Amino acid sequence: MDYASVYKYRLDWIASFVAVAHKGGFSAAAKALYRSQPRVSSHIGELEHVMGVRLFDRSVQPVELTPEGRALLPHAEEVLFRIDAFSDVAGGADGVVRGEVRIGMYPSAAAFLYPPLVRQLRRRAPTVGATLREGATLSLEHLLHSGEIDLAVRPVLPLVKDDRLVSTWLWSEPLVAVVPTGHPLAGNQSLTLQQIAPFPVITVGEPTEESPRDFETNLALAESGVRPVIAFQTNQPQTLAAMVRGGLGVGITNALAMLTANCEGVRLIQVESGHVSRHVALWWRGDRAGSAAVALVREVIGALPTPRMQSVDGTGSLSVCPAPGRPSARVRAPALSPAARAPERHDGRPDRSHR
Image (cartoon, rainbow, N blue to C red):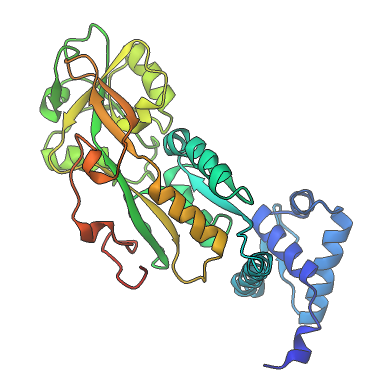
C-alpha cells in the first residue's frame, strides 16, 4: 500500500460525499452532518479537485451522482464503515462493548420486538444502543445494501436480491382473515381461501402494476387456485382494519400485523393456507466484518421471546403473546428443521459459512 497517497484525502470530505449521495442534496446532507451547507459544498469541491473528476451532476435537482461518483460511492461507504468498526474495537479495549447499532424493522415487528430489545440491552449492555429505523419490507433490503442500517428484521418473502445478505430465522406466523363482527364468516374457527373467495378481499401491497406479487398472501391465493376480487391493497395494518370495519371487504394478511394493531370491531380467524406462512428472519451483510456491538445485538434479538398465536375465546379468534421459549413454544405455525434455523442466503437456503 502507498501510505503517502491516503494523506490526500480527508475523512470529512468522504463523509460529506456519502451524505450528499444518500440524502440527494447538499442542504439535507448538511443537516444530517450538523454542518453548514457551504462547508459541505467545499468538501465536495475539494474532493473533486483532488480526484480530477466531477462526482455530482448539479444541473438537476435533486443532484445525481455522475458515473465516476457511482463508482466511488461503495468504496467511500466502506471507508466509513471500517472507521466505525475501528472505533468500536478501540472503544472495547477495556472489555466493555460500546456502540450504536442501527436496526431496521417493518412496523408490526417493531411494535412487538423493539421495546423488549431496548429493555434487554439496558439490562445487559447499557453502553450499547439500538436505533430503530422503521420501513416497509421492501425498503429494508436497500437500507442494508447502502449501509444505512446494520441489521434488519424482515420476512423471507419477498426474496431479497442482494446475495451478500445472510439471515437467521426468528419466527413463523400464520395468515389470518380479518372480518367484521357480525359477518357471515365471523363464527368460524378457521377459514379456507375458498370460503373467503366469494367476498371482496383486502390484502397487503400497493395497488400499482409495479407491486411485487410474491408476498405470502399472494402466494397462498395462487397455490389455492382461487381468484377472489382484490378490492383494496394497503401496507398499513390499521388501514386494513378500518376498511374491514367499514364493510369494504374481508382482509387477508399475516397474523402479527393485525395483532399489534387496534382490532376493535373486527375478528381475526386463522386461514388454512396449506404450507404458506410468514417466516421472519434477522438479516445482515455477510461480506462485512461485524463489530462487537452488532454481534451483541444479534445475540440479544435471537434470544428474545417470539410471537405465539393462541385462541382466546374458543371460536378461532386469535391473540398474541410472547412465547416463553424458542421454537417449541410456538403454536399454529409450521415447524422448521434445525437446518432452516442456520443463517440463510437471500434465496432462503441455509448458509453454512456464517455460523
